Each structure stands twice: as C-alpha cells, then as structure tokens.
Image: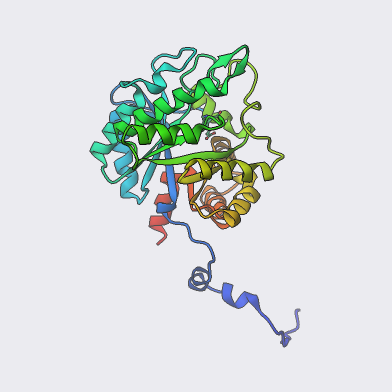
Length: 331
Ligand code: PBG
C-alpha cells in the first residue's frame, strides 16, 4: 500500500494542467483554421475530383470543382488556397505555366467567382510544366537561372491578371522575387503579394507531391538549386535576399524537419513567415494512422501546433480541411 504523504513543494506546475479549461487558458500557442493554407491541385476538365494515390484524402480538381472546394474550405474558416497546376501538355520550356488559357488562370477565375473571400495563392514554378521535370530551362544538362527568370515573371503576371492575390515563386532561382516584383509593378499589378519560397530545401519529403503533380525530374535531382538540408545560416541569407528583393511574406519548406530554421527566421525577420508542411510529412502521418500506429487527430494537432510554436504565422498543409473540421468541432 502506498502511504499518504503531503510534501511542501515550492512550485507545482501540475496545478495549471489539472483540467481542460486550465490547460486551454494557459496554452502558449494557438491554432485556428485561419492559420491554415490549403494546397489545391488543379487539372483540366469538368466535374473532376480524383484521389491522389500517394496522398490519401487529397484530390485533384478541375477548375469548377476547385471553386466548390474553395467555398467549402472558406466555410470551415480556411482563408487561403495555394494552387498547383497539372498541365494538359508538357514541353521543354514549360509553356502552359504562362499561357493565358492554362489550367491555373482558369482555376483562379472559378475560385474567385464561387468563393470571392478566398485568398488565392498561385505557385510559380516550371517543374509541373516541363517534360524534363526541372524547375527551369535546361541548357547543357543544367538549369539555367537567367533564362528561367523571365518565364517565371510571365507566369506570375498571368496568375495575378487572372485574379490571384498572391504569387509564390518556388523555383529557387536567384533573383526570382526581384524580376517578379518588377514585372508585376510594370503590368500595373502593384497590389499583388509576393510570397517567396525563400528557404526551400532539397528534400526527400517532396516524393508524394511529385507523383500528385507528375513533376519528378527525369534526370538528376534538384540539389543544384534547392538548399542543402545541412544549412541554417544559408536560409537566413536566402530570406534576407528575398525580403530585400520585395517579398511580402517568406516561407520555410519543409516544416517538421526544419523547425529550428522557422524559429531562427522568426527571431530575425518581421515579415509574415509561412511554413510548408509538405507532402511526405503528410503521407507519413496518414500511413501510420491507416496502420493503427498513431492516433491521427492528436498527431496532426501536435504537428501543426509545433510548427506554430516554432514561429510560423501560417502553415500550408494538406491536413487543412480535416484539421479545420476538428478545430471547429472542438471549440
Ligand atoms: C514546385 C514545388 C514542389 C513542392 C511545392 N512546389 C516540388 C518540388 O520542389 O519538387 C513540394 C510540395 C510538397 O511536397 O508538398 N517546385
């Protein structure tokens, strides 16, 4: 039998954890649906909603159904979507990325019509649109920075003209924020926000996305332009450059394996910081939950809370819809 004994302890931190209301009241980090940005894959067609095999619970939409989905997300309190296009045709220079009747401009117009309050963000990159799968124009087996820049600028102007509120260059080309800002301003689109994927690492966690977007490189890898996972100081340099070039918001990507980078960025910069909880981070949780190895709801809540705690203002996550549902329900 355990003998009853009372100790005189100076501090008892457990007092504040005794009940759910107390735990809520003393929580240092908050997570709301308004912190979440939902990625949407869009492809040509009508009435399409097709499941992505590598990402259970994630679908590809045609422009019309993307509009419906954005409206559904808005009802859950999710204010923003981030669009990725799967083109009808790929070529060596990624033409559909910057063509007027491309899938992304179409989706932007549909979403703006069915859900006017949704903040529409458009990813700006060539990898989904090139037949070789690299993020820029390839010359002599290498991605050519300066030949890629004008194409990214054209894509950004296209999306902004179609009504995108935010353009988000993710190609990791030097100077991409500057040329995009200049092109937008030159086209009278000075109100369009630039969200730089400033610290984007060459990560193994993009695997499921590449099958969803059909954008795996056909040769080599992206290590010549995306960052080395070993580096944190370099991330500060990339972010500082993007801010100087005119980025209104900056991103760290992936999120979970880079919480220290998010934290360091938060301490150093005053622009909004977005973290991208990427496809591999999503699918790992889904796979473990499907096997009964972890409880999905608490794991997702813990993951998203940790990213907020590290200092991210907003989180791009494929869990957005589900998590917002849980948050609304648990209020
Ligand atoms: C495009 C891009 C990628 C992701 C976002 N934008 C893929 C890549 O760089 O290969 C990955 C997103 C994810 O894994 O969820 N450049």
